[in-house]
Length: 222
Image 1 (cartoon, rainbow, N blue to C red):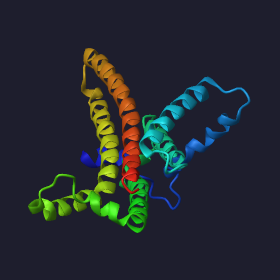
Image 2 (cartoon, rainbow, N blue to C red):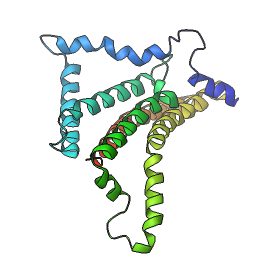
Image 3 (cartoon, helix red, strand yellow):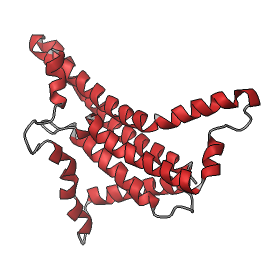
Image 4 (cartoon, helix red, strand yellow):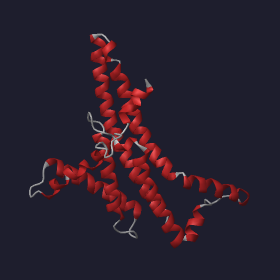
């Protein structure tokens, strides 16, 4: 039973997996941004991007110019993949640690390399929070070091777990439909619609959380 449930998250075992190509379906939407008269979807998306850009710009500050483009691109990639996973027969690539770790680990590693090579004293100061008693300083250094090392893992697992949890719940409820009465099926459909709305909200929130935490981590290295 559990194997059948999780099989919906299995990528294809062929030489060239067509499922992973769904990650790049966003490229098909890109030409829309070059239309002479923008569509309503394009105008709405530009408003969202401007809001996200302003949010990231406030966090990053004036020192690191151009980094907002990287984080808005990251937000766009994750939110598109999260939303596409809600459609039938489309592979949810963000439900795999291979995808999420490939996003979080290089970002975190590049921040750490930049911080320790260019702002070593500043990075060492981050290991001891302000106001820590002298006797607790060695323990705080260990705790802060561990919490810093597990950051890419927590980013990746948070996104993956949230994507898997909602899909599994919808699959579990959908599999019970054949054993229900007509009234219960109607209730099941209403519940599935509400869950789909909830999953849409989770898709937006998790993409925002992933990108905003990455932005906060980059803020600490300079």
